[in-house]
Length: 212
Image (cartoon, rainbow, N blue to C red):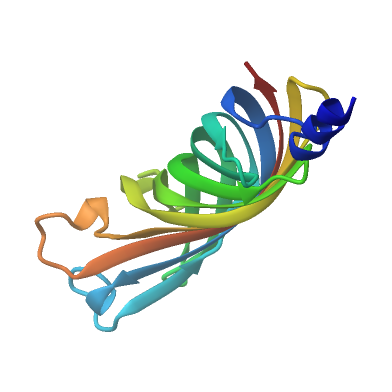
């Protein structure tokens, strides 16, 4: 009986976070983007700066792997991809409108957390990518002009919390900041006009995972 008591004290039963998991998540994204065209474009007289602020909702899937250590620290890796309904509309050049749209986004990240039995607060960081489009809505018979259609790559950091409400099903809430860097406008490639458009996002997500 004494031996059994000792074992119970030194090896308490608890939830094990180790293993493969996959799931789905939804959330809200607030983006910030600045478009710059030197001289207002070819033949323009002044520089043009336009702030684009796409926002909206996302939904996607994630897959990852955790390894719980003896000291309750949990290390892992995760990848995700999401479809974005994230766009914005702003004045462009005084006589037209500019529509910005994030078509999809994804990331590959490392994670680290500390397990309080079935509850796991964590931090995460890694690389991120997003497909970003910008279109001038002219309102003329010539139609709209797609001036940017590129995949941006950058980095992402965040924090969140997970809770295993059964041995298999895990709920989560997470915040992430992503900086997708700056790229030259697609329309200006090879023209010689200095252009750039950058993209940063803040997003909050909730999700559900199944642990295998």
